[in-house]
Length: 102
Image 1: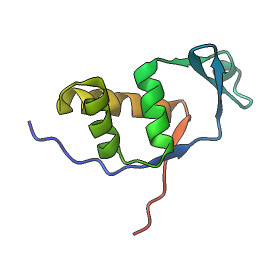
Image 2: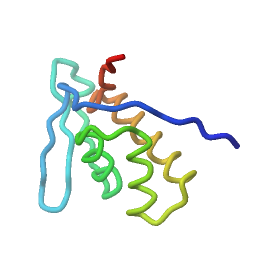
Image 3: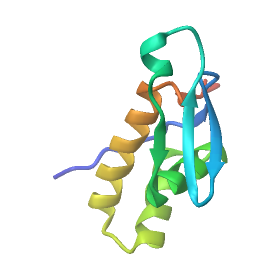
């Protein structure tokens, strides 16, 4: 299976705020959408790791490599899990793709 390179970078969206409650990290939606306001998103340790790496400005590929190293998983598993998680964070507007100059 050929794995395509990902070159996306992300920035924090304006639609959520992060809160730390004891050992948990929670994303709280902002805005006027009542359906979104009824939701809280709790990040597990891997999701917290990806969230942090994305906010550092790392590319998808860099995040995948770090996930594989830090969580001792193969590249395909790390890529699949990271892609899924980043897509979820974009869908809830916690992250957005950074504009690339080129």
